[in-house]
Length: 577
Image 1 (cartoon, rainbow, N blue to C red):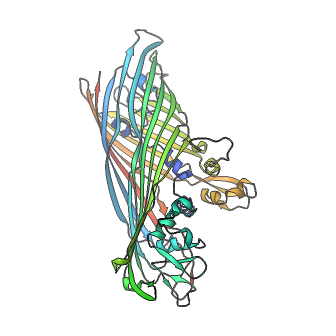
Image 2 (image 1 turned 60 degrees about the vertical axis):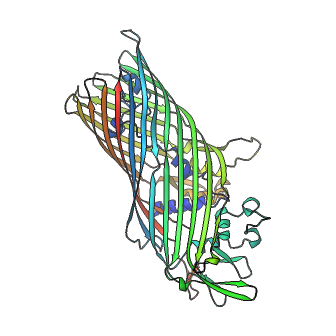
Image 3 (image 1 turned 30 degrees about the vertical axis):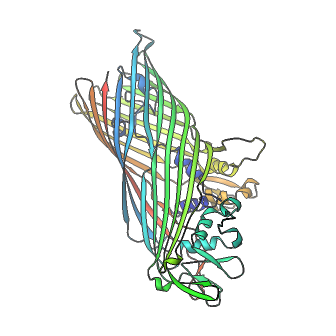
């Protein structure tokens, strides 16, 4: 557990090391590549254990041969809703002393599936008996997430951490003026520039040293410290989804073998917002002295606000091939393989900072320019295997096993200069060693209560592809450790020896009902609970701080525990023809 906590905290820290905070880390590549299948209400209710089943438009995205199983065409549309439920606990002292749970919910309307298939009989008794064509949109992930955590902290401050991070940077590189834009002409990280120009910290002493407006400076000027409690709030919000537009061709061979091919075009929109607030519990204990000529003016810090907005729009293309075989009338075996997706990603990001004082004259705020960057990402290949057994017209049980190899993920620039060094060398080597194989087990069943009504249930369990290693000295090495010390490993000064998986597991439980009329109309309902592993997040870096007596406090910055559930509900309306 401690290893997992360290991993997730450092991932957030590593992201902020770039001059302007685009994504392009292993963690972002995994986020953009992962599938959490939705589909029709029937396939979702059965845990999407449909590799060997087919006959449903929700199954085609998993196994292209699914379209060839149906002897009829169909049109379906599946509206739905997803509800993110996140419980958060705040600890001001690192990984101890967590406070009460704060629960937050966020609901979004979705369209998990819409599509149509047509079947053409060839008139042959053997061989190719029918051809099928389908076009559909299947949602393959939903990023809906909202979390709020808060507590009181009298040791560290995000504003103070900005000041600590700026240590050693000459102040001439920080201010934005009419003649100088540091976002364009300096190498200073944009979050630090935004915090400085938003009035969050300023210089003192003679050595490019800075103090935050949430700190006091000792009488002798040797150290600075948080003088009194701060009320801190961390908010994270994610919205967006990944949807695959699928063009499908299927073939029925003698009612025993079904073959299918997909050309998939995934489209994804991802929005991430991180906000952090801190306010003085008692502003009188946070005096700020301003010097104007020979005069000194005192005001009092009240609150500070920091926000980071990140947007990513993605599109790509992949191909997949599948087969379903019926060795007996009741048994079906299925398999499919999907190529890596060639994905193009366009990102934008922006920072904002503001500070508020008892005298509003001193209030300040800053919004950074909007950063932009585009690049390519190759995602994992996937392979699914399944078996299904039908009990006449009474029902069916189905089991799937899927693997995806994330170690093949690779970033590349939009315009490759073959004479230049690989700008993504560190990220791609991190992907290779610290992202491994993810496994997904899906089980589903359907029971016909009457010829017209069915009840369904499903379960799925998926593992995380993230790994850590043991080095030749026996030390644990995380992806972040490796990236921070990349060239030491790249030049073989240090060596990785043994990989280990973290063992995180995501579980889903689903159930549903189905109605099939004597005519062409059918309707299905489904509800699913997806329970994600507990994660740990730190809203800012650890840094060395002091107490009012000048004692060095070797404490961690706050930690936040998040417990995430995602509830999904959908209803499919369908017509056969």
